[in-house]
Image (cartoon, rainbow, N blue to C red):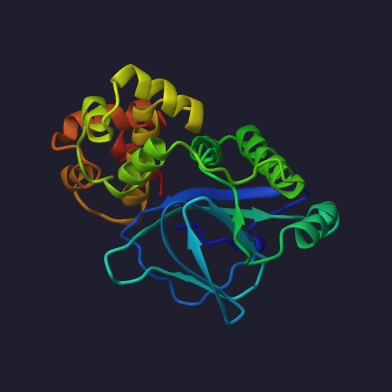
Length: 267
């Protein structure tokens, strides 16, 4: 997980410090603060979020944030549920970006979940890759893309919607089964849908193909495991549904542009 410290950066404009997918195995955090805005987008499961002593339920499709130095934490029930979420850290310059900060306070209250729907996973996966590219221009692009999303949410153009029941079932299955190996045929059979129809329906509702969505989930979780643990590559591969570590390494390099060991070494 990224820990933001504004004093470490010479900032003259908004900076996106990082975007990461927290694995579903993370069940609770101690109360803590950051020197940056911390944004959350829940892509699977449910839990609770505490801000300023107030608890709010959170679930898939919710988007919420805390301001710098606001004490907060997230907790997942111990009854077998999980919480899969993207976390983004953004620093706003107190002089140059004051309008963004003011607009956030006025239109998206701190700590209050906003229904953003199911169409943002691909966006956050791309944002994560941009923020980790190590290129100043791509990092700046990530910051502006994210702020553009904030204004779409403030304007109400990213509203919650009820998708097709079969797609909701597929999304929940993919999110809860990151550690399992399955095929497109398995998914279509599970849903009782003809495969080509399922692909069209999924792309219409989510914006990407089913297996691209599933692979984004698996590779994002693997990236987090590589950066936050010292587990052997074979074990990381198994935890995201790849019994063959060499196949996993090939797919991870296609996804991230780096071999798993190189990716881990950057951290």
